[in-house]
Amino acid sequence: MIQRLMERHPDWGFSCSATTREPRPGEVDGDHYYFLSRGEFERRVDQGEFLEHEPVHGNLYGTLRTVTEERVQHGETVIFDLDVKGALSVKRAFPEAFSIFLLPPSMEVLEQRLRGRRTEDDADVKLRLSRAEMELELADRFDVRIVNDDLEQTVADVQGAIDRRFREVGDADREL
Image 1 (cartoon, rainbow, N blue to C red):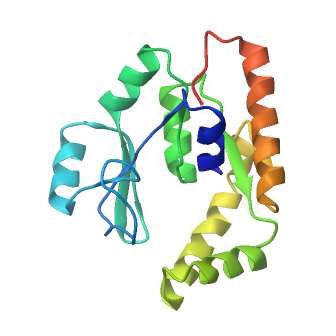
Image 2 (cartoon, helix red, strand yellow):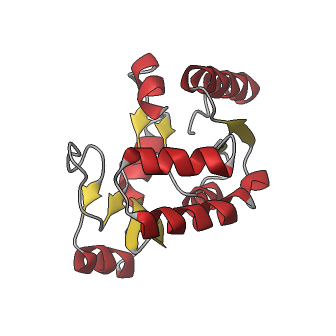
Image 3 (cartoon, helix red, strand yellow):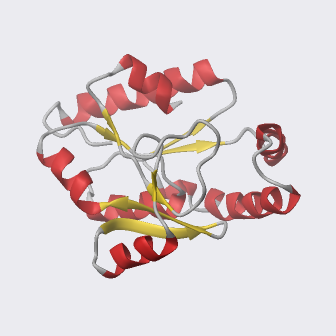
């Protein structure tokens, strides 16, 4: 989803999150995530370097504050890929941010997608499904909710929602 949007808008920036999880095959430090040791991550939390941070599935994830603030101050449109709690934290820090919640077509489809990735064992899939149920309860706190059933249609729906938002607020206020 985000890759497709970034291809359409190469001038937009992607907010690269930090995590303590191990890189998956093909992931590059500083591109997909900033991969930090747990100790380094916790040190940065203690120093207030995160805009938001959250334990998720036994690992820590967060958004570095200074990187985000600098990009927004320079007028860059920044796209975040966050869990629900992280997104709500960013919305508190940047009330003008536009939030989109991508819903699975059903819990059954979500489970099939998770298992199809083959990156988690059965226990991890169950943990993710449990968390998804909690996150779905918070979907109404987002500006827009879009069902992610067909990738091309979802990209079009997200692009349409972003275009409407830009028309509403004007180009002067373009953080996502």
